[in-house]
Length: 146
Image (cartoon, rainbow, N blue to C red; front, side, top):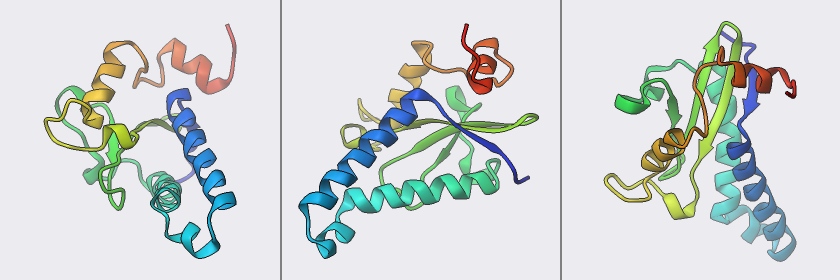
């Protein structure tokens, strides 16, 4: 299904803003050929492409997570040790981007700062709900305060 409304949890949005700021700083500091080859610039481009690809079909089998995270999806292709974690609903058709790890939390199975472990901790703190019908999420999705 196409035509999903794309939303960004403030945590994810903050990470994207930090990434954009780093790209801007690099653009001002580096020569054009160095800029294009820089890993942060490449990561920013891959994240943008990932969002577009996810929007085409957020329910692809390779996005599935298991166990405690089974209600969420993740994108990893082309991102190396970075992960995008998101959830979606077909009714209403919404994709909510929730989490993007940083250089301090690169994927390493069993690692203390593994992105999946950090996201689980974020969930335990009540940082996000996966349910678009959750009243807190509904207010946020619809842009209503209160």
